[in-house]
Image: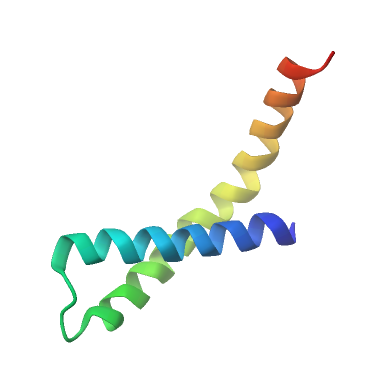
Length: 66
């Protein structure tokens, strides 16, 4: 669970930062906008991580088990 939580947070941070940087550039209020985008991203990425990661792992394990 800690792994899923950590990966979800870090991926949301990196992706929201990169997308915002490409979209608006490094403006004066960049970090204020980024932190709000990051929080919204976490609202979606954390539940998605806890739901999708176990399902994907089970699906992969089922297809790669010998």
